[in-house]
Length: 475
Ligand SMILES: Cc1cc2nc3c(=O)[nH]c(=O)nc-3n(C[C@H](O)[C@H](O)[C@H](O)COP(=O)(O)OP(=O)(O)OC[C@H]3O[C@@H](n4cnc5c(N)ncnc54)[C@H](O)[C@@H]3O)c2cc1C
Image (cartoon, rainbow, N blue to C red; front, side):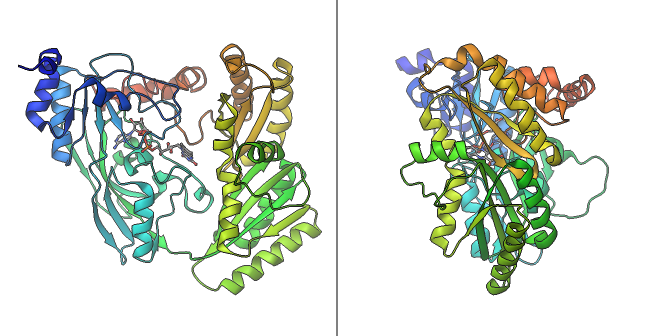
């Protein structure tokens, strides 16, 4: 017996024997890269990383883990922002990565469906749909790293929710493996199926706590190759809201994205992202990026945008606007919005609050939350942006200029409590699209109603009576 084999836990040997050395990593240096989250906030421990190739292999792994009571942490692209794919500190954890389940099983341009395995990278699926002349509308800045399974387990949102809904709205069917190794064969690509409880919807957004998603059938839409993007400057969020009302009324389903960011985001971008191009000659309090898209007739789309922005300027719903004139300019405009997270990361440790509000409350929320955080910390820098059209704000806080990098270790909790209390006062949600994971567990316990928490725990106990699936996440 080699020294490595002698020091290996007995259960890791069981996994190796059942699934083969090609699918099970046990050496500490091979496992090490799998133990931390994307942001580098969380780090855990594990005895093995299992990389199955089929749903049957996932089932084998889960049945063994169930018998052993070994905790299982499903892993997609590890781009989640709440530490949900990072194991806790116990050495018994098994990380189950879907990264080798990458097959696109079918694309049907009559039924407009795509069936793919959980380890497919989202960007690859978008490209496969585009090659078939269709649109897979789920789109987020992490799309070239995140995986379909992770997108569904987090019920990802992204930039096109205003038109197509969240990830769960795109799912027609799911194949998943339950913790005891049973395979849930729910891959039916039916648009209509009213046969009792919709079990697949429980798995969507469950953050790996109920089972492992191995494949899904998704809705495709007609491709929308004609795109027009405008960045409009607004005086405040109230004007952004009235602009949204106008654009939606005039453009209806052509409205593909309605994103918001404040001038403080632009300051950070210009400081931290050398490639950022700001399209205006002057600075304004806030901006919205609006994308319209259509299947055909570029000229009609352009005319519509010009007409509606003209009306908005005349009615002073916005104060300035730059319309894209090329694909390169569309990409530059989108980079402005999508690089804000990167700019904030480069600026140093910060607090993220991915919150959701009834859309009409956003302007008042922004007015009332800022004095609350400034009362605690006058020089904190709110970096506010988000998917405004969905009522989703990233109400992030960067530390005061010149303060130490660990500033939020002392002040963070109190500041977050101020922001989330205020969100709840307006009937909002403490997590719009990133989930709960381990980051928001205590806030979930504080703000989710006792009845909802109890029902969720009872559902968890039905799917996962031994409690092996992603322990310490959500609850
Ligand atoms: C730059 C950047 C921008 C982002 N923008 C957005 C955005 O606009 N909208 C948005 O919603 N999110 C966004 N995110 C967050 C993240 O990309 C999403 O949450 C994404 O859906 C996570 O997918 P993943 O494959 O990386 O999952 P992971 O991070 O690997 O896992 C996330 C959760 O899903 C579980 N899981 C993973 N795969 C499976 C599976 N097959 N079965 C069961 N459970 C599974 C994990 O256990 C974990 O609980 C962003 C992240 C980054 C880094």
